[in-house]
Length: 327
Ligand SMILES: NC(=O)c1ccc[n+]([C@@H]2O[C@H](COP(=O)([O-])OP(=O)(O)OC[C@H]3O[C@@H](n4cnc5c(N)ncnc54)[C@H](OP(=O)(O)O)[C@@H]3O)[C@@H](O)[C@H]2O)c1
Image (cartoon, rainbow, N blue to C red; front, top):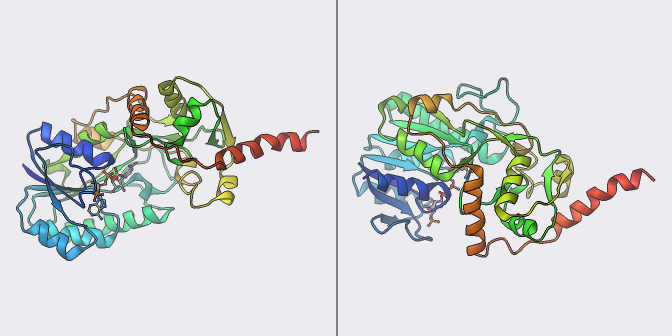
């Protein structure tokens, strides 16, 4: 198939493009060309999608069988995608499980659970989903909505208190790191290569049209376990110092937005629907293998050396609390 990928050079989308090429598809990326394409045989249409008129004209000047839109965040973005991809046989839209919020009526959370976004990013994604489904029911627009959970890969050393690479160096230097509360909140962490198998497996599959899927690892982990896996990759174990979510929020609500909302609560999503409909989705990358790759990438690219001293100050203050009370 001739496949357009809006994005194509980032975290999830690089793996999607590589897998599409492996499967013999012809791939065109649509992005601003800030980063080189993942392979030589990929064509790039250079355009900023926020310039909607140009974006739609550039896409419409070509003919595609299918499209994967990785970077539509708002109702406006998806209205533009609907116009740009009006002649395409299948469009996969990338949403997020965060549209479901953090207070659930049942677990594991299935796709029919009410959406209750708790942060602006998720509220926009939820509104974008509604626009697409309305268009599907109105005109038959052939969309599939994929909601990935948190994905990690070589370029992305996220942790419970945020998306940063500084903790790789902290661990190597033997410095403690922060976890939120006791670090036992559950989370689904999916490697980008496993995520790509879900996207590419759904592409062109009739039964997926008009459907919404949770793209999550069938097994959850806790943040504390996840942090320990990265420590194994670095080869050193350090203390994880628990700090309550509300304390982090009062220190810097923006910096700790996810740490004090989505990442502080138990997340448990059902992967049953995508496992049933997209057998190609069968996560294989272990945390140990995936995080070893992440650490190697962080080291090779010298990422995350620009840390401030906030984490040390919070840890010192947290450790002194008990001493201040018990004299
Ligand atoms: N990563 C996660 O944990 C996670 C979890 C759930 C859902 N999601 C969703 O998954 C999607 C992918 O996330 P990601 O972080 O992995 O993305 P990504 O693959 O890193 O996507 C970035 C890509 O988009 C292009 N791009 C960015 N801004 C653009 C613009 N204005 N116009 C055209 N191209 C643009 C970038 O190239 P240029 O910079 O060269 O333009 C790059 O190719 C997002 O929709 C996100 O909400 C992610």
